[in-house]
Length: 360
Image 1: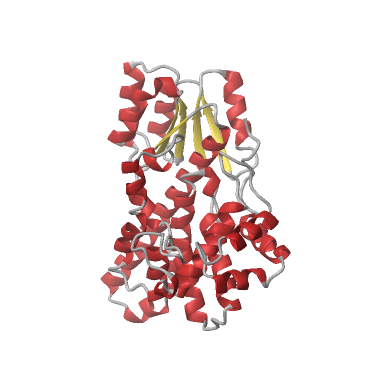
Image 2: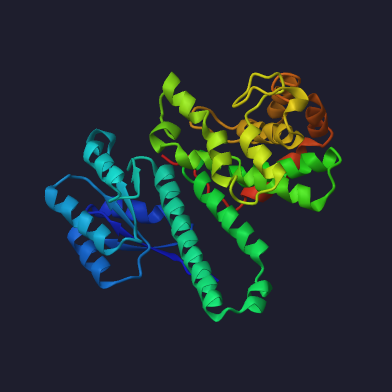
């Protein structure tokens, strides 16, 4: 059983400090408090127990900035999250670009604070697991113990790492947390309804669902999280993510269904999609399946600009876009199941996600 993530909270104001501590009362984060950046630096220098530090950066004094630089130099594996108001964010953005801090969050947005902490916690967990795997591989290579290597369950390790990676990617935005797991499950169900029974292909569709947005790793947060409409140039960069994602995994021995979902999940049945403008049966069946699963989750999920819609609304919207956005055969497969079944899948895949909505 993994231990709790240890977070050091740096906040001068006692009332605000208590408020921030309360944010993490229902999740697996062990919060310890410091009243100043100097106190925090001393504790970090004398202890290796902390994975994360959350700093409310009220004033941009040169001394505080220099202390943070020293903390980064002496604790390269530490996740540093900075809270700063938008009107004071210029220096903080510079620190983010320089790699001094890992995350920049508005202190008045509790949901984003929780999302950033969970994101950095997951990233540190993945890094720790990767180090363990690398040490194990190194030991096996040193010992030249091929028989022991063969006993390792590499598929289980691969799947675990894959899911952790995509969870961390989902956590870049609180409104998409859990998205990859949900659409992966929807896609598997649709594939089975359409007669795809081979276990290996169904598992590849699941993996493709988990990895579909991996190309967004290469898209800057300044574009992904932009609160205002994207410019034409920014939108063109967003549209690169299927090809970028495919490029990231093509050198791996990734099976066909996985690559097809990553590369073609934004193609449309009428040919108006991207990146290649394929239409109808030119689009691989697994990508046509995924397109509907992706839309179903998007419609029934919360977004900052609207409340989540119920599954009846989603069904009407999907039926409306049959033969344009979606393959009508896939639409019929979706409609063949009671909406309660789809809603149950969503609940089962997201029930462990903390409740962010409604926080002010």
